[in-house]
Image (cartoon, rainbow over all chains, first blue to last red):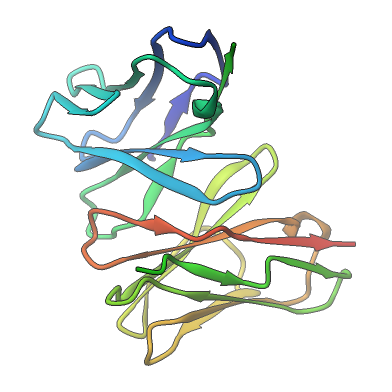
Length: 112
Length: 111
């Protein structure tokens, strides 16, 4: 079955880079996503990468995909206190259904 | 452009009652997805509707049901509520299957 794993917690200082890691098991994954959830709010789509790409950059965000190891990472450059949130990795398989399988989320805490 | 909206924001029910949650997708989006975010369990896929039809269903009992209306809005119904149904219920919409945009959620508390 499909499974997505993330570390639960990451703490960084403001101005540092943050790297949030994710592993998945479904080799037929077509798209991989990063969502952000602030306290009491829904999920905000940050970025996504197609499985035939190995990197995508969008302003302060860099996504790296190692398809061989089924490893996805999200790097946030110059992390700000406003980046404190829970970050979810998700994958969409090529099963014909467009539903997403989510990891349990990584809580990022940015201290001043 | 308005995002995905959900109502109510909070809902308090007692065991055995029924709950109805509503979702309005982004204009132009034809697919609606429902997810349950329960404490400690992460986000679990519930239901997917597209063009008025149920397309896929997650591993939930039949007392979780829903529908999609001609205007693409959607309802999630939970019958015979149990304490463990307490969760944040998130709705997402999409036009293409590549991106899903989420609403703020409905917090359901079952007492």
